Image 1: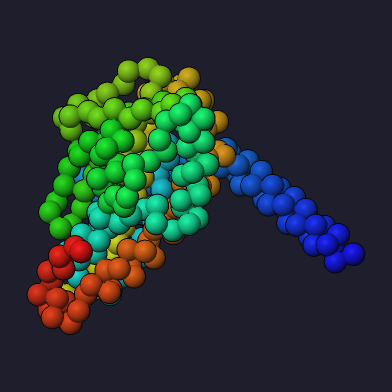
Image 2: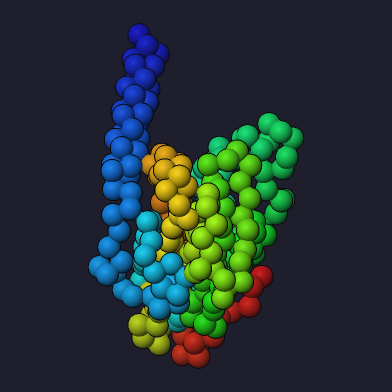
Length: 242
């Protein structure tokens, strides 16, 4: 009887999760393209590359550490350390693993290093403050590849059938011992067919992408505050990595 009840609870929870996910995907589909960048802080670096996005995800968190420390920690963060994030990446990598390909190189890897290894390129950087990386791709394919572009060519690139993606890591100084960590992602497509395809992709897949952002922000906060000793807060200098 107890086992039957537990199975019933499990089935109910699974059903509720499926319904909730379906509702989220429907809302994401309906809201796609309805961005309001003017309601968020302006980012002049980001505006150089995608000024009028179809997707504009903005996430921020206040950190009790100097901006240079927060920035260094964000760039070096091992995004796949949390189990929930690792599970999301594992699920996305299942098709590649079925083809006999490795889902990820062994050992920890910093967020920026891993992103560049995937094919993104650095578009702009203000040392100790902000970095913008970008690529063009077709994410609806089973085997996704990211292609970089020189910064001077990125904004004008309009070859049909592609999605252009840029994202930032930034640490805004609020005080000598306090900063605001910001990560922002923008997407624009190069033609109506690519828009239709990406919209179909984004509606269900964005839930995992946004969840990763919510998990990563507290990771940066905890590690930056751990590194920010009183002496380092006074100097505003990040610690060496170990």
